Image (cartoon, rainbow, N blue to C red):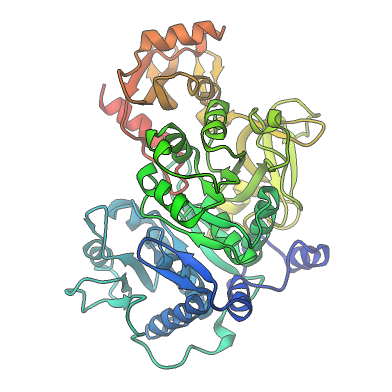
Length: 543
């Protein structure tokens, strides 16, 4: 059994009694929809369009193919597959087989993969034949060279991949005729997936995700968005990260049609919104900023849109305002981490001053939060401190790493609180506002500079599409802020213009950046959050 590292049976029993955890799995949800609405369209991407009956049949077909590997139950399987119908259904096929799916970003390459594969010792690695002109099969073969027992599974493989196991919606299963016995499928209270998080140190950890955590997330997020089976969900964010899980889980929970695209540029999203009449979007701030800024908006009908959710990173109020005006629907933002669903989630019925303000909403039902000082003592409402969270929607720990689990939660068992590393306030009504991350704080000669504050202000500048602030070394002050900018079209912004803009906002001068670097894009993780460590490395290497 894939047992959670820090959850005790008593904790699970209490969550079942409270109704936060249920006896249903995501595979149960798929089977129920296939029985109740077999011929309705379930899931769509640019190459495939499946009904619920066809989606279930594909899951069983994939399971037969993968069963031929004869892997023991709970064996980890690495998935490095971009958004697609196949990726969404492979998730369920692995749960059907009782194999532990570990998701890594499709943009990762050999050096990043090696560390995770060494930790996991997986029985298989699943990749597409190519991604962004990169030969993924060759990379998977190279990764498996030191691991002869590791199978390479290829989605829609090329002709020269005879040594690999093939997965395709257009071919029959390569395995036997029968799906393995039902006692292999994961139960409702087991860990069914792993997510890679590197944190600020770059050392990978594998976050455990129990099945009920995923379903509880879906319930909470769809309720805050007001999503029902009548909606069409746009999964416009990588499925390997938190916001993607919310979209995927909401699809199975509600039975809404699920729409996926090749990439997240406006050129890919807008035709899909118009064609499929997408009504509820899950995305990330960087993707929404580009969509709201795109001149292509004038060429497509987006009147079907009813709500847009973003998570994974700071969403500046200026981006919210532009998106709501240009897309004519409310934007509801959230804040969270790989280890915890949402520290807060804005609801569709929250007032405009909440939606467009600094708040990330209230914590999900069942969640418990507190703001603490440096000694771990709870602070009163409105005072800033580190945000801690616990409850049935938090991770059960780090896979094969109880020591890191205790460091992050303080202890195993019900008394553990996840130390988010975020500085936040919580008001008397329970609304959370993030101030910044402790590890991202820049200490400029003894004065604290939080990048989030600067980035939110600079998002209002007409020449800045996205801003990221990192600390760089300084002989006199220790470190100082460097502003990294993805510019809008036209002449790029200058440091002098930024200084004048911040002066008009009456911001303290010690917070002003001393250097400006232009980028076409930032290094990002699987949630589209900026990888500040790698960004700072790029800045320093260009000096």
